[in-house]
Image (cartoon, rainbow, N blue to C red; front, side, top):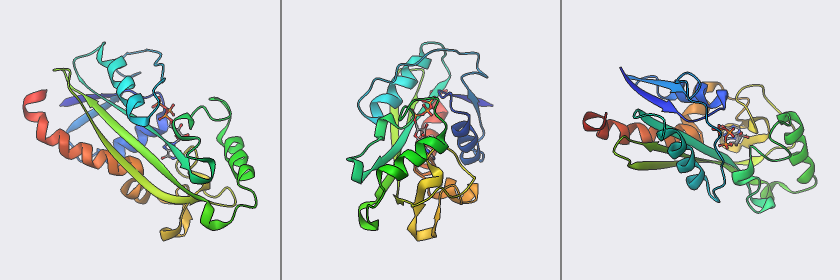
Length: 201
Ligand code: ITT
């Protein structure tokens, strides 16, 4: 079976990615499972730059296909913050309950129309010939007024999707994976991979 190494240390992402890619005949393994341990300095200014940095850092250690996800939450009222700093917002190791409460406080009293936000995801894939391709997915929503839901991870409990009248943390995983930034970016990547797989691996 063909193998892709996913350059992430975020276990929640690996779970979602495996679910989304399960119909492909490809084994997705984490860096840990592949025995690759590298500290990646995410010093890009955009999601795309960071996704490519992650892929390139791991490509040095393998000739397998390497894939990475750089994602985050853009809040319009905060001029797009936390954006590429989503994981580092208020400190990398701070529990999300605290980060989410902080955001709710920052938006206290802000009316509904101004609470718009989106999750953005860039997926990058690097191949043994050195080429790298990227895909992008977004999901539009708004910052809710309270923490709601136990599914998902990160900012899901405050990311409210009006169309479904719930946060992404209240969604069953299949629904989130179908409509999410990551789901959309990975779906497009799946098609691009299927086009290339024959001669690239
Ligand atoms: P890797 O770099 O090792 O992949 P990371 O968690 O540091 O893991 P990012 O730099 O891409 O990943 O930061 C993404 C952050 O954006 C993530 O930690 C969450 O805070 C947030 N985020 C991304 N996708 C999300 C989702 O589907 N639901 C909730 N929060 C999400």
